[in-house]
Length: 452
Image (tube, rainbow, N blue to C red):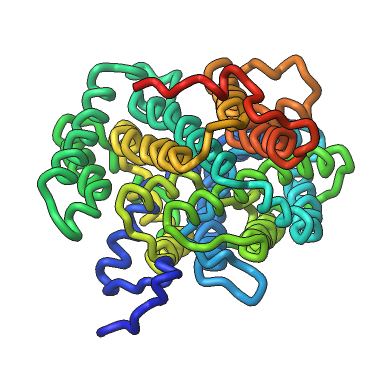
């Protein structure tokens, strides 16, 4: 079936054949699946839940992530950025949720805090979206670069095996399997053309999984364990409770999530080559916060845009939001059929680690490409980039750097993405928006010639 031509100014509206749409969409799901199931596994363990109850959390996470992705990509009036953004359960909230879940309120206090904080997020979205004017290329390029750099350690941990306490953590077999997956991606990218080239990530993951089976590094024994079909039950864990301390802590997390989502919306807009204004950021944030507010009803946690999938858009060049919507429908389907979710979960983490090197490195490369358009002469843009990247790398290089500070400080700055976003925006306002007293050559750093 031939689809009508899309507006060249909106490449995200391109429609592909049904087969290609779902193939490319499946790549997105394989890329982010591990990130979706990690928070319910961690928080469920902290709350002392049984294996059966944790499985319910995982299915709910998949179901809500799929529904949120459909909302973000297809949109409703005033809700959804209509960009190729995958929504998933945010890892930024894990430490706060673990602290609340370990207390007397348990999991129900976590759900109550999320509902209240999500509702507050919806209310402040119109004001929060106005900050988009403070995101010129010097800011967006810096943030995109830090998004990629902050995700690379995730790929490295996957390549080492994913579980640090496992006996084969960092073994040659794990890293070799990641290297094999990466090699397949590179060979396919180099030799294949058209659709096959754009499916290089999926082909690398499938080939890596097959190779893992051959060498005994993949385990599909859990496929038959648990229910085949299961619809998420509303309030399966009881009625949410509202504790003022937990709500305040979660509001701080929500602000971090909103900052990261804003950065992801701007990043994917830059990569796709489409206009992103305050209205579009606001629509995207509303979808984010609406999904977050509703998530506890189905037994799961805050949903936000996934930065790793921005890298997949950059690698494949597939900019269609309908491809990501297809991926969202797959996520929703996995949430209804836990057996399919267990099949995807059986993909060895080292295989994903090899593919992740390409994916996450591509995000950083896209940020560098954006920074190449920035004017660094006669201004302090170089200082903005240097300091913001420094703050973004601190929690990667030294994870406990902010641990001695108040809770709200390390909740905000332990995320390299939110730290870099805040610092870049504030420095841009200080150096570029406040023009009074600004000199023509304000810094030795800014005036230094590029290295050739």
